[in-house]
Length: 232
Image (tube, rainbow, N blue to C red; front, side, top):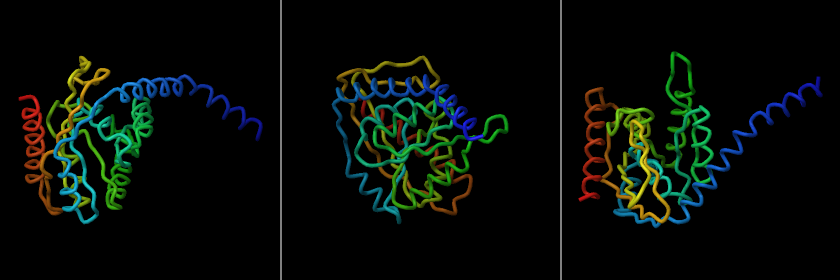
């Protein structure tokens, strides 16, 4: 029985070998890119302002899905920010790279065809860590849009943790743009990436659905205004 278990374990690991190799190849590619970037962070004092507004000293970044690479690279190896990634194979790549960049990956996503993807447990873990003083980031229009429209997830996390939402945009001087729903962008080698923070946004713990939708619109507007300001 023991030998059988050992053989099964070895076969399992061998079957995952191509997947693991691809994760490492992707990481070396991203690491090489990051080493060439020039990062500029504007209004960084708003980070501390957001921390001061939270009883736990934490906040949650709000960023567009298309700009997540710029946001991750701009905050790499600074502190262990939380990231939320799915339990899919695509999520494996994202989690592997984000961990290498110094972040803490929380795995889970919403239900699909009534099949649980660990989303509830992931949010519970995310909230628990934020209540311990760890800040995080959410792609507010992910995972599949609509593009540049904030969904309720980040607002609900803010409510549960009493921690503010900190809008941030990441604009690269040059980038590759994918033909995807979000126009996903990867900064090109030697690009300059500018991160711009906006004013923290708060919501009370007893807010109703109407207030939640109002704050979603507020986050959407804040991110759009920051982006327009950066591109002016």
